[in-house]
Length: 508
Ligand SMILES: Nc1nc2c(c(=O)[nH]1)N[C@H]1C(S)=C(S)[C@@H](COP(=O)(O)O)O[C@H]1N2
Ligand SMILES: [Mo]
Image 1: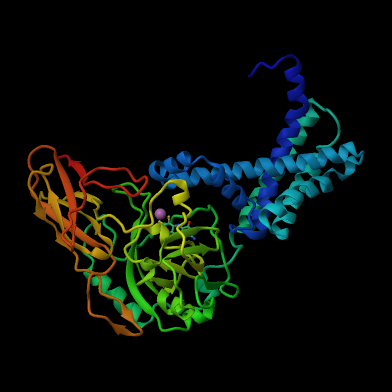
Image 2 (image 1 turned 135 degrees about the vertical axis):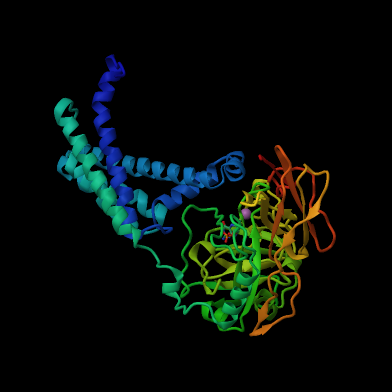
């Protein structure tokens, strides 16, 4: 027990139950919003999470990205849920208190609802979400009849309990109802009959070229990482979505989803890697993407400028040299299916050989410009608009039955291509070439397979050796097709990508 005395005790007695009921109202309000719109930008937690990210000091965001990784995302989401509960709970309480001051205590519920809607609707931009939040709060306030003046003891406790149980019920109801809300998976929105023959063919070649190494993902990732500035992804409908070419152009041009998907398609394997990941991190993945060359869409506008400013439906923006778009793709399919929502449905940019951050998802506009500007991450101190560093990752160390040790991973060098991966099992004194998977096949353009060449995709590597007695250090490094050795200098991810050679101590 905490000993509370004097005036403090009176405050707690007077406001404690009210605060708890308010909290319960907040829970029910958030649950109501979720029940109405599901995990979409209309969910009240979405704008709150955005506010948290925007107001968080850059250093904290950087720490979350480089050190906490996915845990950072989960913490941010949990914080946003907590703040949303507090915010809506406060709004509901304010409404209820107002009802009492206006001497209409019976209207505490409706007043709490009004208070909640007045906050939830504008911040979400969704009447539906706001009204549902208001209903949730009103039900709790009604059940608790929070309103009558100071009250202590048993009655107050009963009210708090009743409101808690109601909030719990609302929470369960909200989760059950909201789960199926929001836009369905893109494959439901855009009819898809799975991979077409070209895509099937390319995917099966990737399958054949995948080395069987336990603990190393196949050449086409099974679980593609996601990095987003928001906790809740946008969900533009392909019916409303447009893509515009603007700025220093002879004439602006706008395309809709049908314009995009109606054009001759190109399929290519592309690896993406996030500049914020640690050296041996796992924010590096590969997929078969289908789309339209960006130049097919920008050429009709006759752009005449050196820089581009690219915008997206989630408020994200990036700025980089227009030349980086020379061989870029606007992709609308991934591994033969419509882009998953988390990867940018209806369409995203793929910029060959560049860090993930300029591969803008949910892309809506390319503006040509003469002046330089900073993108979302550059404003926060990062330098991630350039080409990727070369890296060989060490993703598995396995003691085989025959006594040998198997080490393996992926290597990626952007459009330079991986030429070889070298492994040392003595801490870097001597080096051996690892076995590499064959490069992924070149692109298919309008049904025709181009001659194979260095693709902008990773390769797998594996090395098996007889271990020395005792522990030893395995080190790996890649060499690109221009003959550049992976940089040895060790730097952290901030600001322009982690460098160094990955090493690991192997015990006998
Ligand atoms: N619209 C938008 N595009 C975006 C981002 C984003 O938050 N919003 N994140 C970028 C970053 S930092 C990376 S690393 C890649 C990740 O792409 P993925 O989530 O498909 O793996 O998308 C980039 N494109
Ligand atoms: Mo990234």
